[in-house]
Length: 225
Image 1: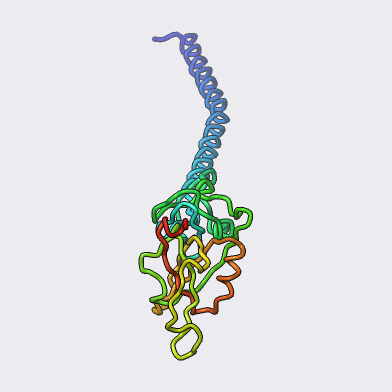
Image 2 (image 1 turned 180 degrees about the vertical axis):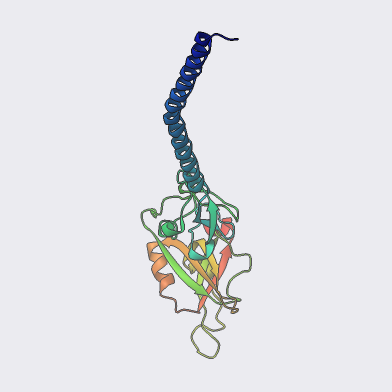
């Protein structure tokens, strides 16, 4: 038969082991809670970063190609939503006022997402002016595009007298450079054309009544004469 002293020693050892295990679990609980808090905080931080990077913003995109030096108009751009970080230098829809009326720094294809680097200076050279004319269908060549030099003539409608039927002397007409062309939103076939010309010629062009403008595209030799 076992001796009483041994049974008492074993019981004391079991009690001590339980106390050690219990105290170990108590010490482990704060670390477990701290780890859970850190993991939860990391999850929120990751979710916030993902939401920021994946957030969609409205930016400006070219609706059709533009040439270097061409003044960007409302008809040249459209709004698209993209997922972009705030550090990506795209021009947002809210900042469209800083784009319209500014020339393109380089030739750009349709679909380009505009950035500040795509824009040139809006300052006209000394002595130059910018003027817009509305041209009816048939009063401009279908190949008219930005960068071309044109002579601007006054066309008097038939039946109103004046210079109707009188030959136009092209060398005496004011000339200008086409900056941009925008087709009318209706089906009339007319077009709004922005021109750059010397200040004096711009004044002559601006004095032509609406709807009586005729644009004549000049070749490089003709434009230089």
